[in-house]
Length: 223
Image (cartoon, rainbow, N blue to C red; front, side, top):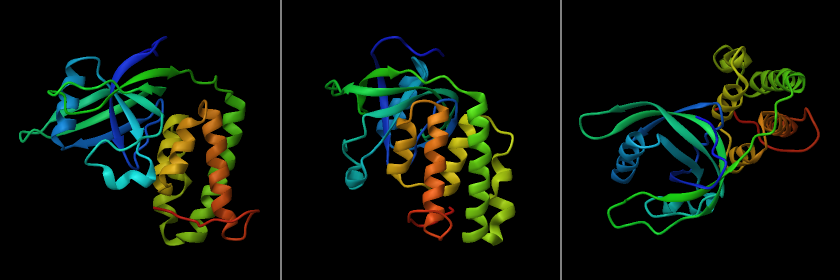
């Protein structure tokens, strides 16, 4: 599905920790009535759902309409399984980033939020630069795992993401490292996979700094 060239209305799904990236897949279990409705209508329509991150200071307001970061990623439903009790298991494939331009008032019969989304183009990929970044990130990740979870090196080491495409590489490391929402958001706001990898390398170096292996400070975490 190509990126639209103008503002478009899409349903939005605010979550506190899940961030979808262009080119990556995201499995979701849908159980709340409003998001069941959203999934059913999106699947019958354009197939698009906009994933956005709730601002950390408002995660206690998830049952309402908490404020969200303005930049998110539209996902296309590539798998949709409705469970007999009305829940869904879906897989979204990230297709394009967007900036929220506004949220129209919703009719009473619609339970979920919708936004006017301005598509954000992705910067072109420099394959040579991306290759160098991936190599450095894999080395830094291996160092981090060896220091904070050596007993799990075979389960969560860089071999888990060797050979995957660039978008999956970023998405998988975000999950393995259990990055906090602000760091996840900084990655989706980065323009293009090269910028995302550069930001991810910075996060890893920052975590290693807390262990005395680089300049700076910060905790090391492996989920």
